[in-house]
Length: 405
Image (cartoon, rainbow, N blue to C red; front, side, top):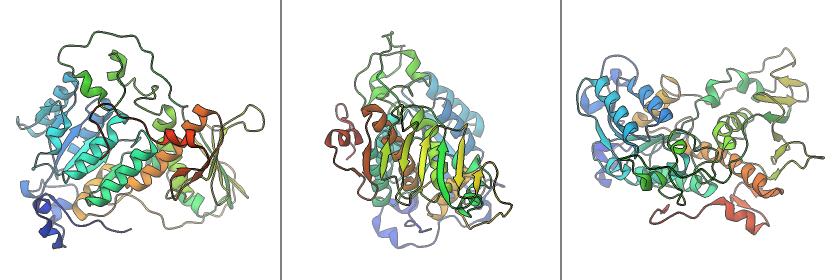
């Protein structure tokens, strides 16, 4: 897997320092768990978006001795204050700071990397700003709200030589040896994949409630269309609503479609046709790939692979052909993979390009559901073919001053 340019905080301030080729982290204690490294050898991190998932990821990163979490940012006061207190308890000091506006975080010169755990409609904008300001990024899934956003995230990561990892730990963590068996054709040549996850998001009609004191509702909404405040939205209940998320299709879909594409070796491309169910011949939403594999939304409890000689999980020949396969680098799962890659400048397991491809499948599925018609897709140009009105759903207007540029 190709490497990124070896840039770190110590020389992002000067482009002239880009000629330095050696990693800045040398001591063995900085390469994994164990004795806490010296301050100059730590990865200084901040968390933006400190609801349940963001705080959970933050706690996972703080278990690494080479990580120093220093800031928590969220427009919801209770969320950011709770996260700040967790940071300070972890390190036994009061150095952790709380912020309302992520721009105050990403412009701090002492921060190396940012964990993004916001609602989905903020992921792309914050990631891009982090890249512009020389920060590496671990972004929770689904990494984007639209296809255009996902591609813009990849472009920013490459332009600014940043390590940007998607946050789907389940792609590899949930399925053991299954990806090796599928790639090794233990059930014969792969023909179909059935994937179970939720459905698409829709319009938001939640009733208006009084905004709690201190909550910055304008900042929570950001680029999304104006919506009156409702408590459900700040308590993790935003996913059913299209302005903030793609629903279950992008929530668990980012995990499971991503896992299926990885196992099938399709994780660097995309489908060429998407067909919604019609209640007759097409029982399930269907993704067709150029190599003939069909991936269905539904028809299983999790993920089922069917080949010419059997199924996985299920009955298949006794042979267990094994193949070399990408995996986590470093130690400690997907979080350790990111920590390792920040130090070495390698591409992480869930590099943003691969995460973007998985999310694109989810977004295209949603568009097919919303419009209730088939789509033809060019995975190289990332364009819907011959359907101008459907192509408009590849991105969304953004409110006010918020742009991807």
